[in-house]
Amino acid sequence: MQHYVLISPPPIAYLITNGDIMDQRPFAIIAGVGAGTGAAVARRFAKQYPVALLARSPKFASELVSQIEADGGIAASFQANVSDEESMNLAFDAIKEKFGTKCAAAIFNASSRPFPKPFLWQSQDDLAYGLDISLTEFVPTLIFTGATASVKANAWMQPFTVSKHALRALSQTLSREFEPQGVHIAHVIIDGVIRMPLTRLLKLFSAWDAKLDPDAIAESYWHLHAQSLSSMTSEIAIRPFCETW
Image (tube, one colour):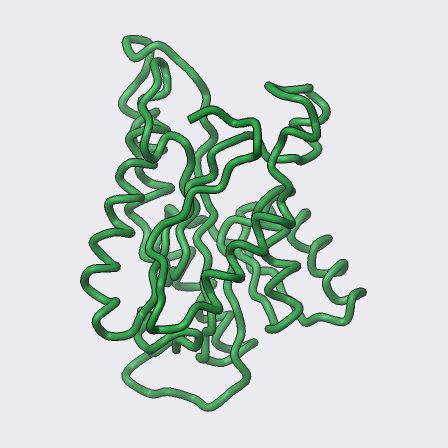
């Protein structure tokens, strides 16, 4: 089984295997494609690149591929569990066969769901699940999706908070290691509720116009990708106008 790493100056980073670089059209990878940020980022990057969509459930990803293709883009979905190494290696073998090896941008948007629960009610599996999603998988990522929990700890949210704090630390240590080599690694703090069918259906938290627009989030991700080597941002926080912090 082959393993892959990202190493190259932005905006083009190459997915390398066994040291060989193939001269092919650049593409983008989005890991964690849901109805909110993941789908919006996929649509935005598809305006420039073919996109490879990694998702645990193929149904929504397949629908998103159809939407992107209807808009004139190129996309393919790959079923993968980011917490399972074998699953990810198989997915990247398939991506290599479909798109080649030249990866221009990669976004790690996968995350466990934040289910509040008192700490004494939590099992070891609760904590392990959050860490498996955020830490233990090898993911060729340039941009990490964080959350309010990346910098703020709330009661009953230990597994989600621990995983998001750890993901932020991982982003920072990778930045310090690879930015001198010209690799742009950034962490995005999503500080607010995102507009998506689930938050509309459940009428969660705040008014609809006070929720984060996924397409606006995607534009911020694109801005990070397009930054010059002379002016790279390692972390940004995105929040709606009315969010207190």
